[in-house]
Length: 125
Picture 1 (spheres, rainbow, N blue to C red):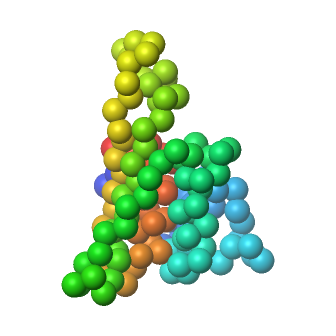
Picture 2: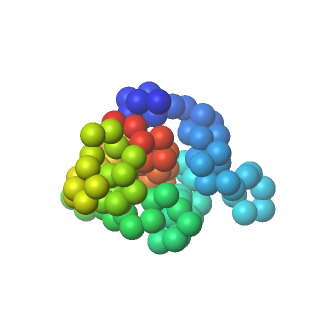
């Protein structure tokens, strides 16, 4: 999927994508990462999980509305394994930082985090 296709996903489609990538299923441990900030935060914490493909990244949350609301999320990845799988990259060459970003409506911080998580897992540009 492309970045624009991911941004156009409905809430239900986005939840299905996030579940597929995270391995979490709806139920006791999962409710709604699009509307529930605690569930979205679980996806956010994947950058600290050593088994996660996002490990080693850095999250940036942007504020809007004079700092009263956060509806933009960015994930920066600088991972050596990406350099090895990219076509034309030579051994030892520094991998550029990959930047994934999503901006949503005011009050949709959980959705912004989930969108960026799915975008990064899809490696969508």
